[in-house]
Amino acid sequence: MSATPLAPTPSAAARPLRVLHFVSGGFSGATQVAIDLCGEQSGQQTLLVLRRRASVDPAPRVRTLRESGLLVEVVPRWSHAVTIRALARICRDWQPDVLVAHGFSEHLWGRYAGLRAGVPRLIQVEHNTRERYGFWRLRQSLWLAQRTERIIAVSQAVRDALVNLGHPAERCTVVLNGIELARWTQGRPWDEREDAIVMPARFAGQKDHFTLIRATALLAAQGLRPVVYLAGEGNSRWRTRAESLASELGVQEQVRFLGHVSDLPELLGRVKLCVLSTHYEGLGLGLIEGMASGCCGIGSDVEGVQEVLTHGETGFLVPHEDAQALAQTLAQRLRDPAGTARVAAAGQQHARAAFDRRRMRQQYLELFSHPPDRG
Image (tube, rainbow, N blue to C red; front, side, top):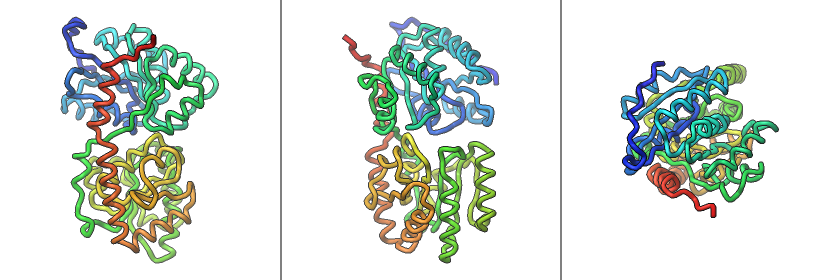
């Protein structure tokens, strides 16, 4: 992909704060948060740099992002050294004041590039509670932490995990992720929605599509056959396994594998139930988007989901990997439309109050604008 020439760099004193966001080009939740932090905001200029992923062609989405006015670059992935060199070169050309490295393992290579290019301020954003650190990568992360201004966690559970791994607690802070509420609040009235289920999540080892598919089969045995929409791309191997399980259990006609959904707000705005069946989360953005869209949210009772909803009030938590419990909860929600509508309305109100992207952007900008005094 040809790079877009970067704008000439004025003197630091004559320009707004320059913030470079470096993140995976896999268009995961971390990628979306980085995108949401870019764009027009008073006192700040932004550059989004994506690290190419072998399984995802970034060209169409990069084109869309550039057409929306974002400054976007893509760096190669095939070796960490090449990634670091390419990103360091961009840093030297664009001269950011702050480099924000999102997600594992991009936060390692991003900060190495920032150090190599002499970027004055480095920030790490951790998006998940469980990452594949291993001995050597954890040592690298802890070494980089001493050279990092702040380590931002997207939930309290993520901050706890970082501190438990040895990252300095005084540098770790929480900024809850947010969503662009205007995109997710145009759903249909409850009575016009499908008695259907949507799970907006990529196919990956972290996500637990299998429990939802097994619960769907248990529902079918009770005579309940809602359509289940699985919206997301991800690893083709995990998707193939999920498709095989649906066929094996005889629910292949109910379970719809949609892949990437370009108009996810429309889908979430026309169904009643949004499920996030998962092994762990940083903060379940797909569930938040479903709740903001007016769906009744149902999630696995694991870290990163527990902070999104309150059981029985703004949504429902189900035991981890318990297909029977999930099927029971889904059956109750489908058979009690009035009660489900009340919880969905409370969940939507909560999502609007707690997870507004404007709040997230302002909190990040305040952190970028006010370096901590280390004494």
